[in-house]
Image 1 (spheres, rainbow, N blue to C red):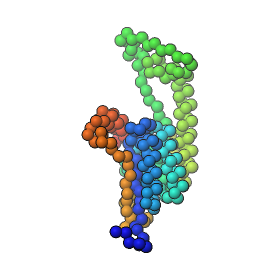
Image 2: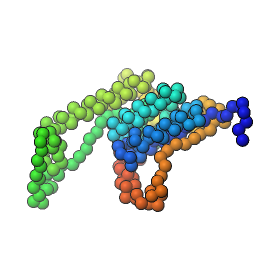
Image 3: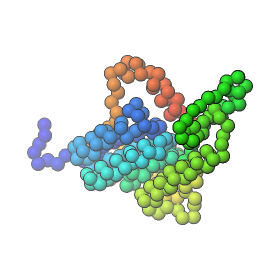
Image 4: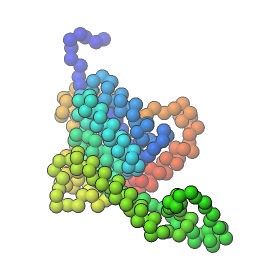
Amino acid sequence: MRIPFLRSPPTVSVVRLSGMIASGSRARLSDEVLAPILERAFSKGRPAAVALQINSPGGSPAQSSLIAARIRRLAEEKKIPVHAFIEDVAASGGYWLATAADRIWVDPASIVGSIGVISSSFGLHDFIARHGIERRIYTAGKSKSWLDPFQPEKPEDVERLKRLQEQVHALFINQVKSRRDGLAEDRDLFNGDVWVGEQAVEVGLADAVGHLVPKMKAEFGDKVRFRSYGPKRSLFSRFGVQAAAGMIETVEDRAGFARYGL
C-alpha cells in the first residue's frame, strides 16, 4: 500500500547492452530493437539515473551512432544522468555506445577502446577458377560490382573502401572527443588499440573503476531500487522455433568477442 506524502526510494533503470551491434529487428543490439526499451527506461517511474551495462565488441557504425544519439536525446529531454558500466569489453561500436553516458565505469579487467573501422572479406577468384567455374556479372553503373570477392581485387576498389573507412573513423573520433574530457594528448587513442581497466582511466577513455550496484548505492543511497529493461522473448523463441537464427547470432557474437581473447 502506498502511503501519501512518503517519499519513495530512488530508482535506477538498468539497460543491458550485450552482444554484436547490427541492423534488423532480430538483432540483439539495434536502434529498432532498443528504441522502445530505452523509452521505457527513461520514462517509467521517473528514474534518478539510467545505468547501461555494456558488453559488446562492436558492429555496425550506423547502428552504434543511432543508439548513442537516442540515449543522449532521451537523457537531455528527461534531464536524467546516464552511467555506463563496462563488463568484459566495450570496443569499437561498443565503446561508441559507452560515450553516450555522462560517466564511464570499468572493471579492472575490462577491455576498452578499439576506436577504428574494419572491413573484411575473402578472395575466391582463384578457387572458382580451379573448379572450372566462370564468374558472370552484369551491371549498370561501373561501381556496382566493386569488391566482388569472386573477382581479382582492384586497387581502385581498395582506395575507395579506405576513403569510406576514413570518413566513418572521423565520425567516431568526433563522437569520442565531443563526449570525453581529459583525453590523453600524448597517446594515439584513435589507432584501433585497446586498453585494460585502469589504463583506460589513465588515458581518459573511462572515469574510474567501479561496479553498478555499489556505485549507484554510493550515489543515491543504500535504499536505491533497480529496475531492469531489455527485449522480451517471443513465445516462439521460448520453445526453440528460432533456434537456427539464435545459433547464427551466437556464432557472430563469439567471433566478435574472440578478437579480444574472450
